[in-house]
Length: 255
Image (tube, rainbow, N blue to C red; front, side):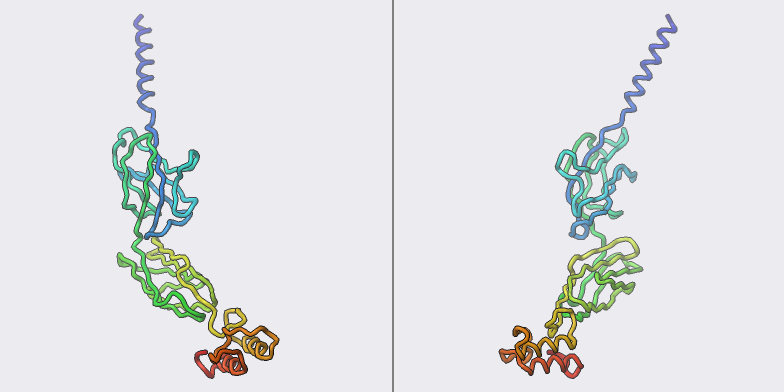
């Protein structure tokens, strides 16, 4: 009889121990995420922490959005310990702490828009103009950074704090600045370079082909385009061809 009671007691303890080991349900989060007021790019990693311990992470598949409202959307799951309920969750975006926090409430699904400030900043003295366009960039990052890595969008780079860069080809360029090999600010389409005046062929430069095309306009072999009226007399004539030729060989500075 005593053996039976002991066996039942052991089974009861086992059941109680098993029940106490059942983990808490995760808390789900979804929403928007921005870095320096711009949508965080795809590949950005969001990490959730409780008491400084990582308890969930998610990599952005779509810029500016983590999780989703649809049933099967992949959300940020925060999995806490038994004693974590009602504790504060802090969120990090690529290692930068977000301003927003949340309480760990197991089994809930919430929308939480996250925003972080990288501390990286820069300006340019000019953001648009004809090629060749020389731009002077000024670093305005906070926190006294010690290193800079610029990507100008046309293949050009610089490690200077305040570089000067010349864009030679028309186009729209995204500029990236990374400081101290960590925080990055990206400004899509920040620089717009247009074709230089006199580039009537549209190849991004003024050369002998432009002189020839204006000459063909004069003799009627090409349709006249008043954009080639560099003399501003209301028509395309030999004077315009001569003026672009002088510009090409460097005898005049502007058209």
